[in-house]
Image 1 (cartoon, rainbow, N blue to C red):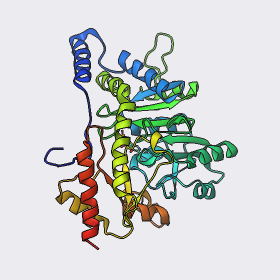
Image 2 (cartoon, helix red, strand yellow):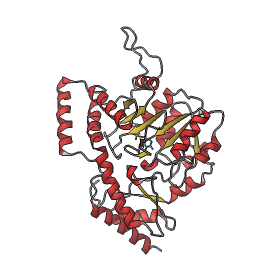
Image 3 (tube, rainbow, N blue to C red):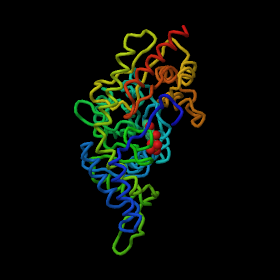
Image 4 (tube, protein in one colour):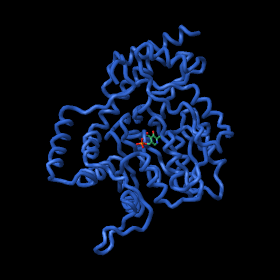
Length: 376
Ligand SMILES: Cc1ncc(COP(=O)(O)O)c(C=O)c1O
């Protein structure tokens, strides 16, 4: 992350956070508490659930395992799950690893799942729709998808890996579906290095997932090692939970600063005929995990390289090649999803992170405008 005038992203822990985390961790290292999935993980779960507005949260070691736990707990093996093709590979892997079949659907102008296209793909084998709040955007389509699921009697799953702190109409990302999966990977708006969490209102699902994250154990009588289902080791270490507790406490402050940076970008770039800004339904309830622009008139790779030459590290794409075109899914390569293919090929994400200065944001915006103007 060094050497860039503007890096793509940067985690933030205050000196107070660092003091809290290291003191508690030293205590654990001295043997005064257990090292994994113990009191801090439980505290993080209950505070995270309260923040999202769900009754339960189940901590784990990644966003990928959070999504797989949901799919396994829903027992949808052999059934179809409709999800966007424009997502991280983990969304589809979670479906596949739980024994279900991914069905890729198209996205809308906001890069999020298009409810109308999803509607056309529902069959008698559809067990769930998994929406992905791409770049942190909770699109208006979320409500249509929620309604569609209710009407058709299928599960609504949220991949909220990128959407901590985003909301729609006062409801937090993660509180729309039967269950939602969050990631705390190092680039996310709040991070534990690696880590994940499921949020849900469903007590049965929460308890099933708590078993699945520990090998499928169901303590019975004097037996601790009694297994009812195939599970994994998906536990969250205590040091990750310590980081999570502090990051959660700062989440709203992180989001507010990201919104300020986004406003600078909006003011600098709005009205430029070479730039289409991907707007959320309401900027005041968006976490700006990504600031996304579409470049209709330029070769995206050339712009990427020119930004790098200016010392700007573009923030990873969401996503540069959709899943239905990835070599790992050859059976889907023939599918045509026109909107997804267009936005994946044409968008760019500008750097955005809590510690970014106003000057850095202005520098990125003017550099982008100069590059676009110069390559006409
Ligand atoms: C949309 C999406 N889904 C799932 C994941 C998987 O999360 P993790 O990397 O924590 O396994 C990520 C994050 O990388 C993501 O962005």
